[in-house]
Image 1 (cartoon, rainbow, N blue to C red):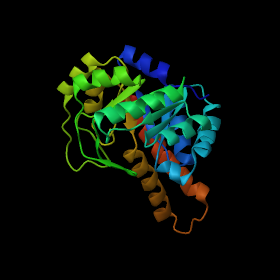
Image 2: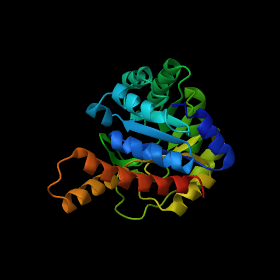
Image 3: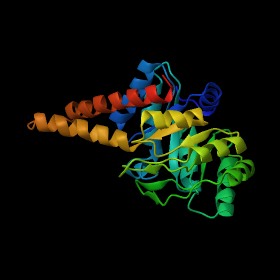
Image 4: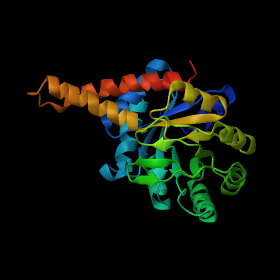
Length: 275
């Protein structure tokens, strides 16, 4: 069944692990993520971005994930990633999402606080993720330059917004890395000293297992993966169609994409669970 991620993140924080959060685009990707989590016996968060919700509505994705979650043993949360408006956050909550993110990272500090607080108050019992600082790169319609999170500001931001978790910027980027990313782990350590709520790492696709695990050891307890899953799905479909050029049944190449994503999710779940 679908659950809020609050307890999942708090447990991860207490245990020195993290919860894997995976962006999905279609039914096959949702199946792959949930099946991998169930096989690994680990909780999981599925996410859709604002851009993905232009492809299909929150109600469609919530129905798909909700139906899939009913048949597994592990906790499954449904999350809005990089929500770009108060209205979209409310639509997702009404559709059955169990948490939402409002991303005001491109706004001024005060404006980010103001709107994030409005979302938190309106969301009620549904947990809200916020972002301070800006994770660089491009993911769907979200594009930004790196702007590192200030540890002292992070404490004020968390206190004034009432957000349940905080996405921070320490040098990661959305999309495909052009080189080896250098993360500011000392900044993460300082933020953890100032902020008690769960910390979120965006832009983890392409990071080494050791880098991700270092971030988890220093306080990250939710790790987002998106680009690598899209690549895995597309590569699976392309390989199937290359080997079967006469194929026309979407179920056949959809399964190939599913299997490719499922393998990738297993790798990432093993990473965040610190096994």
